Image (cartoon, rainbow, N blue to C red; front, side, top):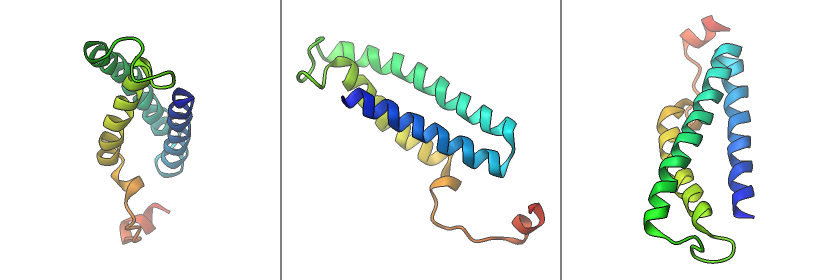
Length: 105
């Protein structure tokens, strides 16, 4: 169940990034950013899987929080901080329109 929530959160985040980048920069940038999210997810899951295998046995912490769920949770925490820096324009609450933004419109 926890794994499904993590996958759903990644899907929603990918759709959010796709929509935002499509509106701001175009369809090519949207696909590139979604590809970046997908690549970081797959490579990051492999790396955190190695870490989880070194720390836990297959059962993990219980029925719903096994080793794979632990590695996905570890990945999601790392991705949160990375995407917070990489997509800082998406997460900032400062949405002042500058003159350069007006020319783009």
